[in-house]
Image (cartoon, rainbow, N blue to C red; front, side):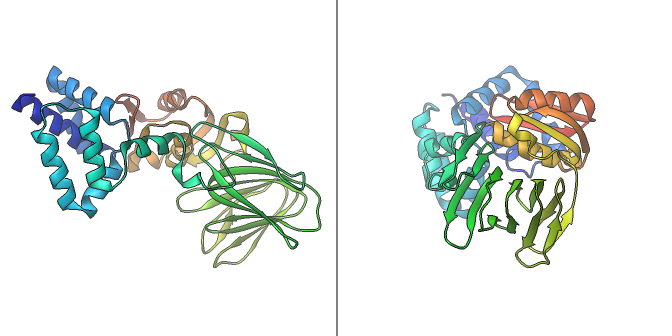
Length: 319
């Protein structure tokens, strides 16, 4: 590999790390597109690195910040090499973050955090399970839940993702616990989705009670939807209740950032949304099982630009 090729490979790695870090500005994206289009060799270098890495490199950038000495040594090893291949990229990943590339790739298909859960689903997968009391539990894609029944209550701990439950009649309450608090019902049909900073609960049949960890409880009547975080719960109605069970995302006045967060559960590659685009309001029905088509439909109805750079990176910006 020539010095010029080394430099292009190094630059392509820097670009993919920046663009998937969540910190890239509009100016950064414009500079990247200018670099990519300015010479055919740049596009070839990008395609090579994007195809070989096949993982969310933002994790490696974060690890590099935590251990700059290891990152520097790994980078030097890579630049001294005469050929960019999977073996050397594996060494780079291990030196920077202490995990294997295989593990990072696997996490995009099978969330590693859910491997020890009672039930879990992969990227793009929905599954339904029969519980010991006859209740039915359906998990959305990239979801994980633990089931804990005792003499006092029937508890489902939602580790990540979303669930839909049909709770059978029982003297014990049916409780769904999230990191932000609990959703309590009896004989009921309910949906709970857990996001980065809050959770959403829908009372599809029967009433529910939402209990934030530190806030006041909120009574949720049948057909009602509410969100809650650690400190409070509030009514909302911006998504159809558990429409993901049918493979669709039925959106009623939600932020684009929230819509994309749900699409991420169905696509192994990274989807990044700029703050300006993420604030746009969305209405419509979109296919969950085909995120690329959903993003294309969003691009036709919103003032956004959707750019795909191989299967592992999609950028969504305001037009």
